[in-house]
Length: 265
Ligand SMILES: O=C(O)CCC(=O)C(=O)O
Image (cartoon, rainbow, N blue to C red; front, side):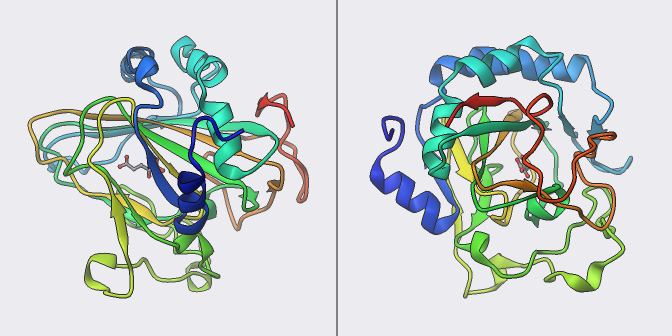
């Protein structure tokens, strides 16, 4: 089962909540790039530009478009992604949750705030993984993760990216947003990356990114997967992504007609 990851890489992912795999999607960069460009041209209902009108650059994101973007479908169903996801999660099954495109154009000052994905999602469980796959070389604007934060007992306050406002009305139930660059007790993991490399991280791993002050584009595709122990959970408001009309109840396995099981157990 470990063909795409060494035992050390699996152990690092389990221990730190993040690991960088080199070159695993090198044969898929062209397809992913075409999908991202299609997504930029053909925005979905959730597409967002996350900068205020007087800020330089552009920070675009959009998600849940795999059903209408053939390049994304190809990557999800034909690339080694599902096999790698199952290996990293130590799960029999790899069930696809959603795709997420994140583009920081040259000169974008705005950092991506430190956050976990789990409080925004209607999922609970340990067996989760997101792949962050840049299709441009990245260094300064790479993804950054707090090692071991996927084991923190409380969740970090979720905020809206555009204006930093609270995402739910229950702000007092969360940890404050951390500042690992000024907290010596926290270790930040980050890697300079080439197209085809992927950072794998748990839905509970705290992550963020600097702006993109360079002259080069920073386009990335995130693919998000859940494993055997993941169940639907209610959050104190509309989740992100929201999936209106999903009809699931707390404790349900995610419905397979909306969230395809790409690798069976
Ligand atoms: O690309 C970024 O700036 C942030 C990515 C991210 O938060 C994610 O993929 O979950």
